[in-house]
Image (cartoon, rainbow, N blue to C red; front, side):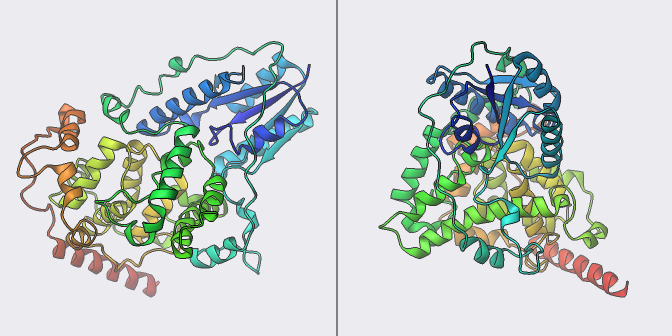
Length: 472
């Protein structure tokens, strides 16, 4: 009997999953599949560990339908060929992803199977809109967010599709790897013990989190979203990273809130559009994920200072808001968006260290790792990206702390106060490798770089760099 193979990627959910929805229409047996390919297997430690929890949760949800998630590791084309050999007649469904490697891979797979008479149906389920739906009048792509937002906001976001009523079982299930054999937690070490307390896994918990945000915090979002001492953000980035909830569902759920003003709704919806913009740029200018978006920045004189980079990673810079942010990320796998900008500015401006060092560390530590959003965010701060913050804009950590953590609660939470540890600061000490030599009662007495000296050095470097470009 013919079967429908649904290949899950960054869409580990049953609700509003267009690929799964389309696969159920013809009544054929459904075989859900997840492939651990080389790209995913080389992801950062925290992301990969958290991915395992998402796969496990999806497997549990599928069991309620008398179904199960088939796990395979390897090259996706070879995996699918092998399944075709064992299953016989099959149709393939997936939701699109938009990084260059995945697009190339998917096109090759689609071409191969269609040449073999096997139908392949890609659908749109990761973003609000596929990148090619939002282009300039001239047919190019937007390089600045504001006009992109104006264009995107005029497009109708497709309605969410329902969770399947039932999933027909195949007569025989293909062989599956055991999730434990993949050992996705091998690189996370003892951080697992503490990170497990912070995660919010699966579509059911994602939806609960969404509803709490919409009914309790959305009305204050515009004025409070940058306060790092408050919990006013949606906290949905983790679930979006694994596709445990769709951007479309979040969008429509926010739009229909009747007791919330337009400004609050729009400010929140712009964050979803910002995520779309990041993947939009990754689609049209793929190098943004790994290289300077502006090629002239390839010649910028970044400093190579391993000691200062290490101090930044370990939250030992002597700047409380920076150190608190770095420790929050290590303890929780997350970091407040305002603090992300502050720590990124400190690394790339005050220390003049290449943004790619920061991007790599974020990749290893964040459970909400999103390649496009993080690359665009880092390049925005560094000045090398599209719609970038001007290089002469240097976030002053002390002023940022006074404005967005006025009573110092956030900094105290992750650093302790007067050498008295808090639960979170104590966890950081326990979670850190012994080689880091983190001591509860010791922190730098002063910043590893004077803020004025660091700022002046950055502006002087940029001025020389700009003059060299002009002379060329």
